[in-house]
Structures are given as C-alpha cells and as structure tokens.
Amino acid sequence: MSRRQNRKLLVIQAAGLGYDFLAAHGSTFAQKLNVKPMQSGFPAVTCSVQAGFRTASLPSEHGMISNGIFSRHFRRPFFWEQSAALVAGQRIWATARDQGARVAVLFWQQSLGENADIILSPAPIHKHHGGMIQDCYSKPAGLYQRLCDRIGRPFALRHYWGPTASTRSSQWIAEATAILMAETDLAPDLCFTYLPALDYDLQRFGPDHRRSVQALASLCDQLSLLMTAAERNGYELLLFGDYAIEKCAGPAILPNRILADNGMLAIRDVKGRKYADLHAARAFAMVDHQIAHIYIPDRQDIATVHAMLAKTPGIQEVIDVSGHQQLGINHPNSGDLLITACAGTWFAYPWWHSRQEAPDYASHVDIHNKPGYDPCELFWGWPPGTVSCDTRRISGSHGLTGAGKATAWASTCIEGEVGSLVDLARKTASWIGGTV
View 1 (cartoon, helix red, strand yellow):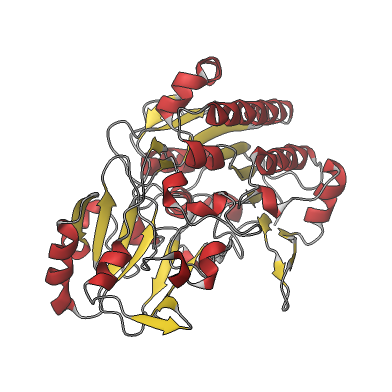
View 2: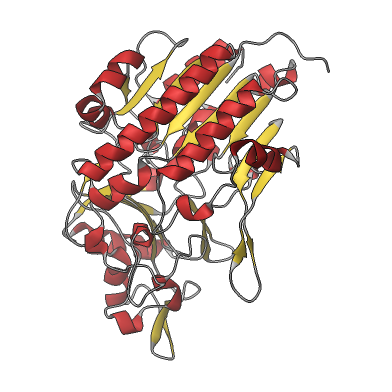
C-alpha cells in the first residue's frame, strides 16, 4: 500500500510528570508549552496508563490492571512483560495505519509484536551461567545498530533501571527519537516515545529534593531537543505524564506479611529462606506502588481477608472489585479485592520478618520474578553488588488519582480542556484520523 499524506505527530509520554511538580520547579518551561492538568488513568502506573492511551479505554477493557499480571492458571505473577498481545483493544492509530500512515513505538511497555511499523524496546539476553548481553529489540531488524552508530554509543540498560538508573537512559531515547524523525527513508508519521528521566530520583528522594529538580532540568533539555526536532521535521507534538509522584516516608505497608501471619499466605521454608507458596495460598497480594490486587482462590475467604486488611494501618480502602464497575478495573486479570495506600505510603511485597529469611532474589535486581514491584532496586544494598531491601529509603510513590495528583499535558495540536487520560486519547485519535 502506498503511503498517504498523513498528519505527523510526536507523542511523548514522560514518566512522573506531575502537574504541580512541573509548575513548581519548571515554571518557565511549563509556560512555554502551555502545560495543563488532567487526571491520569487508574491505577496510575506505567503499563496501565500506556495501555489506556493507545486503546482509549480503561483496564476493565484493555486488561493491563497494573504493571503486572497474575496468572490464575500458572499461580504466579508476571511483571514488565513485553508482549503487545497483553493489551486488548484496537489501537488509536489503527485506521491511520491502514490508510498508509507509518507508526513508531519507542520504549513503550508491551510493544513487542505491536501493530506498528517501527519498534524499539530493551530486550537483553540473560546468559545461562549469569550475566547478560545488553541489546534492544528493533523493527526493522537493523534499526537499533543504525541508531547506536548515529548516537555514538549503545543503549545502557543499567541507566534504565537499578541502582545506577539515571537520566542518561532518557537522553539516549530522546536522541534516538530525534534522529528517527529526520530519517528520510524511515521517518514515521506517528511516533510514540517514552522519557523516563524523572522516574528514578523522584522515587529515591521525593518531589521536593534537589536531585529531583535536577532530573526535571534534564527532562526539560530532552524535551527541548525533541521540540526542535519536531518543528524542523514537520511534526505536531503531544506531551503527557503518566502519573504524579507524591512524597512518602517511613517503611512501606506489607500486605503479604499480614496475610502470612494470619495463615492466608502459605510459606515454604527452603534452607531457612521463606518462599511464598502461591499454589497453596488462600490469599496473595500483588503489589504495585500505591495499589495492590488481592487474589483469593476461594470466594468464601473474601470477607475474612477484607476484614483483615481493612483494619491495617496505612491501607486507605479495601475494594471488592466485582462490585465497583465504575472504577474501571473489573477485569478477569484483576484481583478479587483491591487495596489502596493512605497518603504518604505505599505497598511492598515482602512476607518475611528477618533479612536471613528473605528469598535470594530479594537482594538483586529481578524485575520479572519478584512477585511485586520493588523500587528498593534503585538503591545499592549490603554486601556490595546487592540491592537494598530497606523500604524506608523510598521517598516517592504513585498509583492513585484525585486531588493533588494531576498529571501534566501539553500539545501543539490538541485543543480545549482534557479531563482524563481516555479523553486525551480520544482527542488524539480524532486528530490523527483514527476511531475508538
């Protein structure tokens, strides 16, 4: 099919770009872009928001109920999986692509196998005897090496997550995106990219720390680079944040410990280390920042677990998912109950009581096998070479929506007020000639 003359649009999803944070510390840049507030999708976590935007729908429809999915068949959670098939629903660009528009998806989660012409995503090869080969999946196959050659360095996974994560990963993505938009033989009509610059230090130090403000300055530089490249190559621009990170303090809430101590989460003792037995568990909490899905195989136990968690300090609300259709998260992937954290705190996955009882993966970066999101991986631990297990070190979290939690958005082409993420996605679909 020959390519039609399409409207060209660069969509930038910036992690942690809260409206209040940007207004307080990046006021000049915010005014230049005419940044406005909107409510993110719930839960306000990366995979749910990105899935919601590209399908203009809620988790009850697209199925990404958090950054992880719990398989009731395998009895295990799967976090940060990359298959686009995990996201149900038509993409907002599908009609435009059918009519000849070229679509690029860069560093968005669940992008492998996506309905797009250009894909770029981290895809390291884990070696059998330890270590890994750092690489990125690319479509077309030679794109990643082509960008590495142009930028002068490969994408470093250690800057993307873990104790050495920094704004340098975001800088590489920004440079790659700018180069791609200028490639005469490959430039997409619709380009979706992701900048994680704020995500790390806002979680490490909170929104009021100087390190977080410095990260915002780096993000603004990257946005300036992309704004210049977009204007030079004839692209309109849309920028939006996926969530606002709020300050938190003290140790995290540990719902799995509560369940284990009350006989609801079964535990295997393997040479003194405590491993969750999810095959025998009567309840299990898949935690993700400020929300957690509670999976309860026998519905007769729901009332017991509900009462147990409702009286736990730090838990704001215990929600029966099936009875809250308006929440937009009632999906087969969802837990039987959903809990939300009180302001200033978050949920962590541990169930053990002493460091000696911790599973071996607890002190390592292991984003795919840990049964919950673990921001402690952003800090080094002891002994050297391990990551921290101290939840008190985390100073910023997210996941909830509402007052004081608005995200930022700005555009050179989308006009009017935008109340929510789905509203923004629908307006974007309309502008590019798509249907939702």
